[in-house]
Image (cartoon, rainbow, N blue to C red; front, side, top):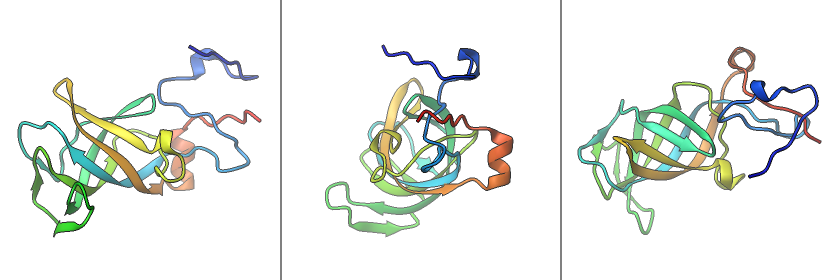
Length: 154
């Protein structure tokens, strides 16, 4: 367990999922949506467009909606099996677009691995895991309204 203090920031101002970053060099920002490579591990039914489970990424627990199933891919080779699949089942892998219901700060796995991997939980169990391939950031006006914690620590 590690604790740190930041000047002029109260402990009560910091909540689960907030991310500290350097405000001058690539500050933390909330995302509008992101594209991810998802592997379904254990889901009793079918995952379709509109499915809205809880996504666990770093310390954040935010509901995210599957807005588009882009392509179904082979788990081992990554080759495209089918474009625009209707559903996914246990054992399937896909590239999907997800949209968080509340503000969420994530990055691509290639750029910053701790903020680029996630688990999808539903029915009190992990149903899928994934890595983020690309990110679409929220607009500047929306960033101010949604207020994602970004404190200059350096």
